[in-house]
Image 1 (spheres, rainbow, N blue to C red):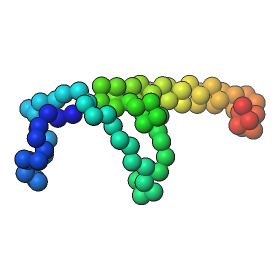
Image 2: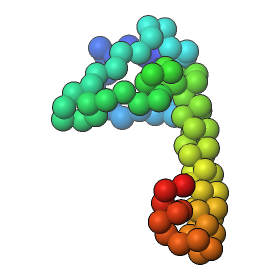
Image 3: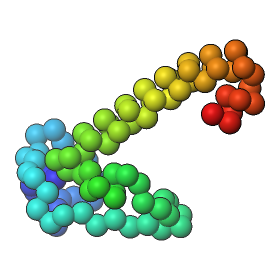
Length: 89
């Protein structure tokens, strides 16, 4: 989180790389609305924000590695046994 006084900022100011950054002090509040995202994610369930935000990248990496391995494995099964047994598996 940025360690600045947001009340004294101009409305058109964009974040800068030279702003000081500190650990999250006040926790995190999640808002689930029907317009945006109406459900919890693994990041919100496990509170992967601030210092733990890299864990969501690790979870995405595991997902895509699993998708690649599963695609290769079940593609092989589909070639050998057909699409239906691979789909059931």
